[in-house]
Length: 74
Figure 1 (cartoon, rainbow, N blue to C red):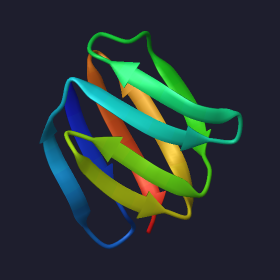
Figure 2 (tube, rainbow, N blue to C red):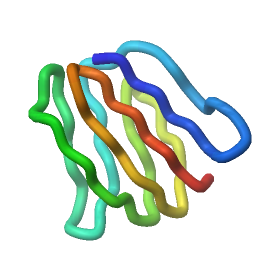
Figure 3 (cartoon, rainbow, N blue to C red):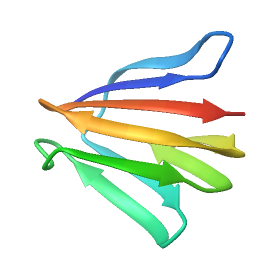
Figure 4 (cartoon, rainbow, N blue to C red):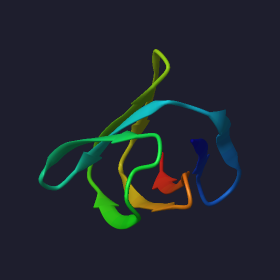
């Protein structure tokens, strides 16, 4: 899937990933290729993908058409 992680000032990361783990208020959410469309509010924690960990304070994630966009406060 196409992954874009953005904060208010810049793009933190953009590229392809097969699996992304997101911190949500209900716990960790694992997103795989071709996941069903969703919008979810993120909680304090780390976005994890391809052995990369990005700590965030909060944010929103939006999945559609095999593209995951994350707007986050880092």
